[in-house]
Length: 198
Image (cartoon, rainbow, N blue to C red):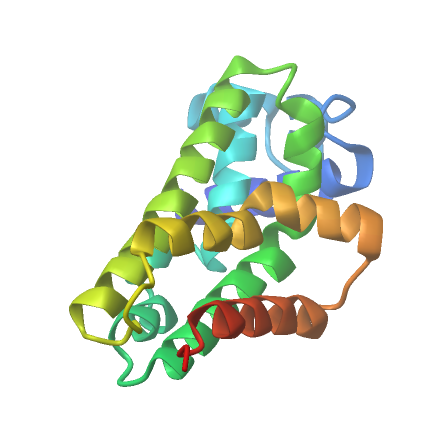
């Protein structure tokens, strides 16, 4: 059963990226995966539900039931002994997500206005990014890593703008930056924001 689900998710990912959300049908996905069309409906119910699963898996990079915030590199971002190491870890996590899920974020941006279920999932994703950013800065403040006068709530807003899926889509569409360039943007911006004032 798990193998069938994996085949469907892989087939769906390929077709959504090749054809877009609207043009891809569940019947096509079933054919590409080599399973009966009914199997897709039984396993996922709707195209939106299947697309959400494709995105969720791309976010973490595998099928393990562990979300981004509880992955080892994300934990490094909350617990490393210096702020520089935490920022590097946060950038690594963000760039990994952008590499794996960035193309799907573009598909989602096209589909969001058509599918209430996907619009809701996209908004939930935005909120999750905001919470991750706030947790990052709250941990840094609690561990005494922020200079006097720096406020977690202000840092959260800037970090959220840098890391959110909407920014990833914009960078891909408009600038075509490489992962290394996106990583540098995150590290350089957050480092400059937190540099100790004289």
